[in-house]
Length: 289
Length: 217
Image (tube, each protein chain N blue to C red):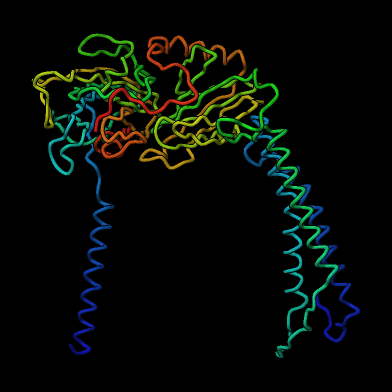
């Protein structure tokens, strides 16, 4: 695309804008549906829980909104390089830019609307529809689901270097593997027995710090069966990188069977466990060293 | 000093620093902790370990530690253990340390073992967590076995490794099954040394003491 230098003048400037807008509109019209329909279903963290689904929706919306902005910048950049580059040997300074009030106003209004709209949508999702979006809310959560009394309470206990789980509804049994029933509201109480860990169940969309002496509550509503990865997301010592497990979301019947087998297997040890509590202050009976 | 002398001195200094750096880097890269192979042959293997309250020699003579017996019957201060894949590994631990108690009583149960776990020849289903001195745990294989400590007032307690069977100890025997090849970490869950109120330190955070690797080959 070349523009004869002899014809360059104020009368042709609108044509450049028109070309750029057309190119931008076509590329955006292609990119946005591709992102929403093709890329979106593969964005993390999946749809194993309602919270994970809302996080994927957020990732999709943010990426789709970002695309036209990125395309606009790239189109202007490439168009300017191709069309406005200096072809002669003489380097002549261009006309001075004095500002453009309508453009500046439109830019401020447009970007403000985007940011405020995203903030409002994000806040609504975080507090109302997604009940904390899978994040730890501390001991007194603000975004509480209405069905909280029906939740399956699971306590997540971090320790150097493994995770264990207590189920107060099932005789306070403790396990070193996590299984959850599908289509069920879950209330995770995350704590630690030593240093600060962070419980990150990737496909569940859950991430909550495990702090000694603190009860960090996170809500999650399981949807689909599958295996999820659990990692520690807080550097916690020698085997931090090995503080990895997998968990499973299974049918309610399979969960009942599993928890029953755990109760049987752990029965001999159950009497030694302390009463279920929101936290367990690190208290070995004696401590060497 | 003339110009040639200064150049020579600076060059010598740079060469000395480079040599020291190379020595350190090569030494670090070449350093491999001692590895102890299990005795026996697939599909069965045998590991013999001991835990001691204080190693008795440098660099950390007062640190608690595991030791492993090599196939020649010699005790080795090393926690990199080599076992065959898809095999039943029987572990005998001579436990010479006194009890500290578990931070999480859950680990007082026996997990991931095959067949009975015996303490001094008697089968046990679980251990009172307050009696635990150490645990031998391979989390990735689901194995965790608490090791009963010797009584605080036991006579003839061992003070320097390797300890002998004539000294006060408990003998814990258990088996677990290995699967595919790989390297798995193992550790102790008892805050048995430098177990500060907020986390492990010293031997609890050091390979060769209360942490190790299980190489399944």
